[in-house]
Each structure stands twice: as structure tokens, then as C-alpha cells.
Image (cartoon, rainbow, N blue to C red; front, side, top):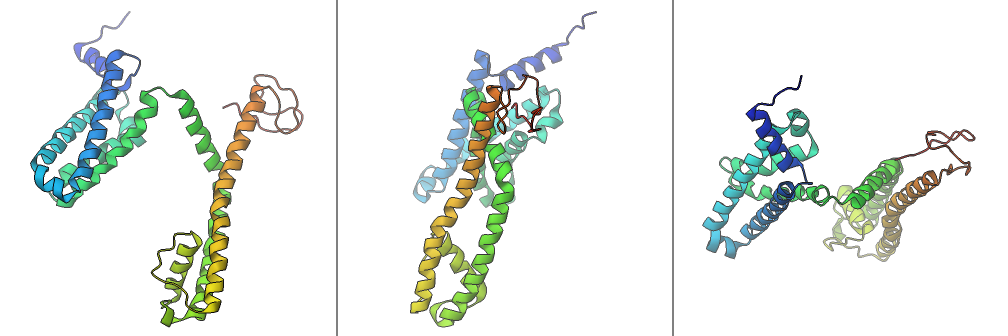
Length: 277
């Protein structure tokens, strides 16, 4: 027997289609309005940080921010109300971002400066891919995540190596330059080494002795190579994933080029795992 829906269930379903759906006119319109409001809220927070504009339009900016915050608050609770599994939304990435984006204005009653944290609403712009149904970009995003995940061990080892090098070279510079040149302690020298190694170069500390300048030049040249390594690691993994996907689409094993069946998860010749994602 067909169950008759109550008015409350019908209302929740309509709200769900508008808020979560992007295939209907009302859903897409709501998403576009939401994007516009998010951009406006971020713009208002940035304008508020400009002293001249804030002093002239403070009341207007403040009222606008409260209107937007109330809009986001209503939207947040509507998402919970119409969701069949509200907890899955509340503890999801977007659910946490949505909650954090409305908290600064309410916290401003206790901590006045917290309103500036409303700029975190810019994270809500990540919904753009889903709203515009950019499947191609979403697929690329997934591949990039997999590449970073696959290369994280290599990157951690590399960062550990860089940290050791920075400690050693920082200690050397402390001995070579001394307190007279601004290298007042080993931690300060390590800070200088990291700043130099990453080619940032604040200029607050600089070597004076000839030997110190030679070591600094070596660190600067080494820094260019160090910057390229993590990029190369991720790029290699990203390219490898794309090649695997092409090989799988062609029905071949990437390792031994054996012809595979469509439902195969492992190569029957070499045992290589087949990535069908």
C-alpha cells in the first residue's frame, strides 16, 4: 500500500530539492543567489578592514553583515531540517564550514574582533564545482587528491631531510657568523637558514663574513632545487595515475600490457592491481 506523505514531508522534500538539487530552475537559482551572497559577505569583511571606508559606511556594513549572517543561519538550519540524515551533513566538511561561517558574528558580542573571521565564508565558494556541475574539474580534483595521497610519504621524508639540513647549516652559520652579525642563537640561525633555503629572504639577518656569504650562496642555490622536488613528486604521481587510467580504459595492464577483461581488478599475468576509478 502506497504511503501518503504528510504536508510536513512534502514541504521538507521541496526544500531539499531547492537547497541540495541543482537540476531544477529553483535549485540552480538558489545556488547562484547563495554564491552571490557569499561573495558579497567576503567583500564586506574586506571593506570593513579598510579604516576610511569603515568609518564612513560602518553602520551600513554592519547591518549588511547581520542580514547575511541571518540568511546563512536560516539556510544552515533548513539544510538540517530537510536532510534525511542531518548528522551526516552537520559533521561533513561543508556542514562544519557552514557552521563556522556564521559563528564569528554571534561571537562578536563576546569577542568584538572576531567579526573579521567571517572571511572564512570564502571556503563556501568550494561549492562552485557542484553548483555548476563541472564534472571534468571534479574528476581532476579527485586525481590530484589521489596523487598527493600517494606521494605523501615521499614528501614527509623530503621535509624531514630539509629540516635536518636546516638544523646543521643553521648551527654552522651560528659558529661562523656569531652574535655580532645577528645570529644570536642556533634557533635564530635555523630560522635564517629556512628563510634563505625557501628563497623568501626577509633581510632581517644577513651574513657579514666571507665564509658566511659563501655558505649563504650555497644555501640559496640549493633552495631552488629543494622547491622543485615536492612539485616533481606530486607531478610524477599525477602522471602515473593518468597513465594507469588510460591503460585501464584501453583494457591493458600498465605493468605488462596484458589484455584484461572489463571486470578484472587484478592482472591475471603479473598480479598488478587495476585502478578502475
